[in-house]
Length: 188
Image 1 (cartoon, rainbow, N blue to C red):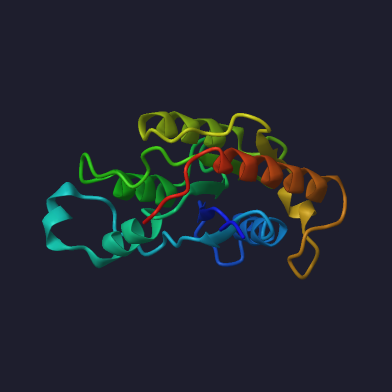
Image 2: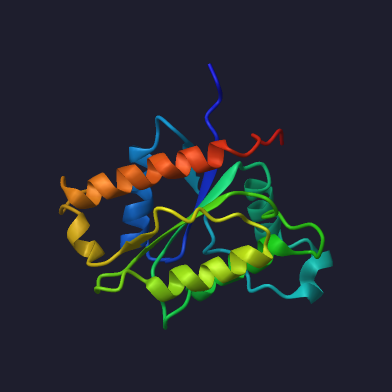
């Protein structure tokens, strides 16, 4: 039996019961036959400061150690002020340093952006894509996932409502699994 690709999910919102975390958990359950996915926590990461690099910041070391062996990364994020949330940007900075030791390089990435409004966090999705280019992370181009009115995707218990939203998310995960599978499985 072939080992499933290991994918880390970075949730842009720090809310324990936020829509992005609900969506990330739904994605994990929908893709468990294609990918071995888990959420990589970012809420405990101190703001990146290169002056602290030699002080062994434990949270940074933990985060880098969890990301390094992964085969791919899926970002599930809301939009804050037409961009990515600060905690997500900080996690990207932490993972990209020290210079020349980025844990992101060559990892295939996917993005699901969501908002309770109509635009589906389009701005966050595209700002994130700009950073991925610099980080040398090939981002899946199609299908794009901008989920507007995302609160309507969930039942009261947090599961996905049956219908077109769930169908789309399932098809996105299938495409993402194929995307990640095109890259060599890490040996770390």
